[in-house]
Length: 295
Image (cartoon, rainbow, N blue to C red):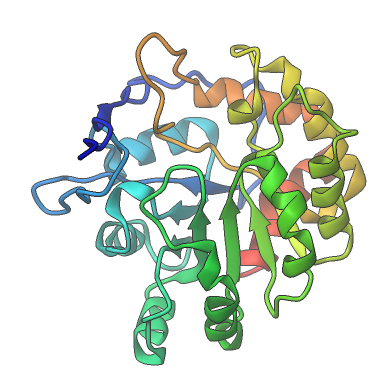
């Protein structure tokens, strides 16, 4: 019998975040980060593909204060499977008024459980086709129908070519969708690729938002400037359908990989969206509309 691949330990986030060179507008939102632990209370799933160090709410808050984040969206990581306890408890610690959650569930979920999650700040369901240990895409249509009455969205973490393949089905869903990490498009594929064009088409139809946090789309690595044409392309094509996230604590980075500095990532956003109007759209107005924050 073939042994499963070993569970790899990944790098911790930086202990110090550099201060960005521009001031975030009031109400700025980090639309994508994870909370891991403490593990004596929230044990990791045995089905995970990597083992992240603890990254707790106080750790996150220290980083968020440095870059000027007021509102937060916690995304359930693959390392907890469908046990959303850590993610939903983190909403309580951060405060329901200014934080939301994206959870991982399967098609066995009932209306009562969904209503309870909604009350605790859940506003979306994540499908993770990259890290594994998540809900299979075969359950997409069933879950979309279940969460549509709550006006939740479906969030996809996929490889870019999967978005091109999924686009016809996505257009038929009764919910908004969110495409993680530049819609999974890699920088060497670029703005003329079918997957980039598919993502833009979904954005322009009003069906999709794209998270333009883009270091995972870089094939060259730090300082990640090879993702700039795609980031600017998404913003130019549909500025009302772009949101941004740190992806803190930057999971599944191993070995000698460069650990991103969130202050520098925030400066990248400032270069991609140089006007106050664009920055406010991406950081404040679009997230408020998507996640139901007060104006």
